[in-house]
Length: 127
Image (cartoon, rainbow, N blue to C red; front, side):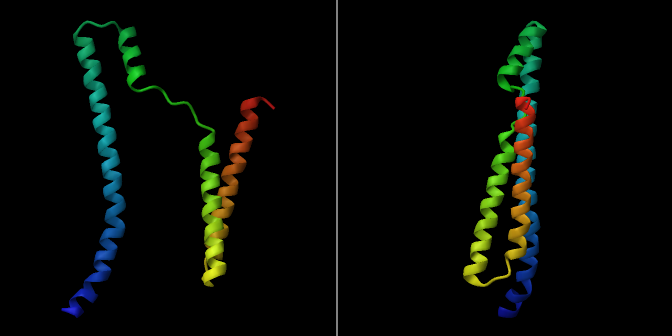
């Protein structure tokens, strides 16, 4: 019985490491699809009830407002990656593990996000 468990462990690891993210992506796509279908049904029922196109546009804008580009997303991502890199670097020092290279990689990606945020912030202010 123990031999069977040892031989199935890699199989379960592969299935769950690939299947888990795929299941999460499928759930997100399904939720987005359901939201789109509900919006289409609302527009169809509003059109069937005789609402004008302007009223329908106003309803759609209330339910699903157009998102503006968010400059702070780059800053948030950069700070998150810099913090993760700092944590990995600290763990590398404390535990003597070889996590310095991934920490440096995340550090430079985080720094790039902060630079992108700074550049878009300057461009948005007209400086």
